[in-house]
View 1 (tube, chains in turn brown, green):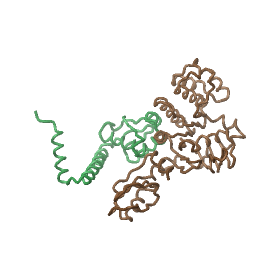
View 2 (cartoon, helix red, strand yellow):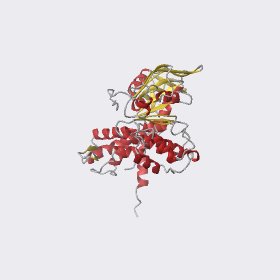
View 3 (cartoon, chains in turn brown, cyan):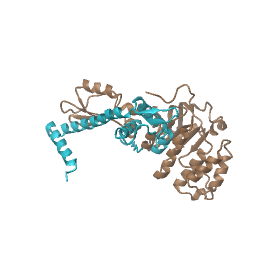
View 4 (cartoon, chains in turn brown, green):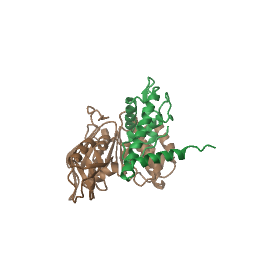
Length: 300
Length: 129
């Protein structure tokens, strides 16, 4: 399988065994994660899985209680200028200063980023149909997300971090956000990390995925590999059985009588051989959507 | 070039692109020598990762359906026609296999399937007037 990320390039984000507790709750449990340069990395997980906590470590808002975080080879807590200056960030709450007007927000943000591209910022403002005189607090939900996206993009960051960018937005704004992700990585060498629970979006734009569940990374791999190694296979046995026999790499199994459907992790040919060995006929063999893979992984 | 991507059907997105471009070439809607959209342009239009489009183009190139030219564009191969015929047969073979599998599951004998195909062919012919 071709890996679009040569391992020789240093990773943009390198997280090693990071643990974070809030009181008695463990939000991150020895999480290790490598985000290679130049691609779209999708971080997926349910509510409270630890996505936002992990992102806040990358941005240096949280200091790891154990383990280490490196962004562009630097510790983001000790080197906020060297890291944050190269990151564009859109938070889930899209916490923008409400008292400002859109034009003021743009000038204000520009002051923090030497690489701010005024022409590009203006292009985005027009494309997003944002009125420079409009007060941020009066913006609709969608326009607020677009304003947040504008200030995250206009300094052409090396790393764009989007935390649940699509949540609660209509399809038109969601498309703007996905378009921004695609344009960002089409520019040589830029990297996008985004968290989402809209898995069809992740499937469209991410080339690498990590599934986080209860503070742990349960799976991280290139998207193609994940798609190629998860199958839904329906087997027909010679007679009715009460309990289906185990098949290699089974994540979930459902059915009854002589027909049982397995969700498994493995190559199709290997699974078929295993089914043969059980004396079963394969009546259906299909690839899964990322959504189905996610569910089978976290319900395990 | 009309391509429709669905993340909901389980087929890898690069394969959806490959299959649909093959289909467009086989059906003549993409002519030999015609230029395909640039990777970045198609990625933005379909809202998919540019690496996915690049992979689809690489597969199509390896299959001889498209070729890269010095100007960096990707074009439908000139030798498209014999290949197109093979591709047409392949598309039909897949459909026939699916039909036969379904007929078997529905317990319809093969002879009846053949009869049905003939009936449909007759029904779809323009009536002589």
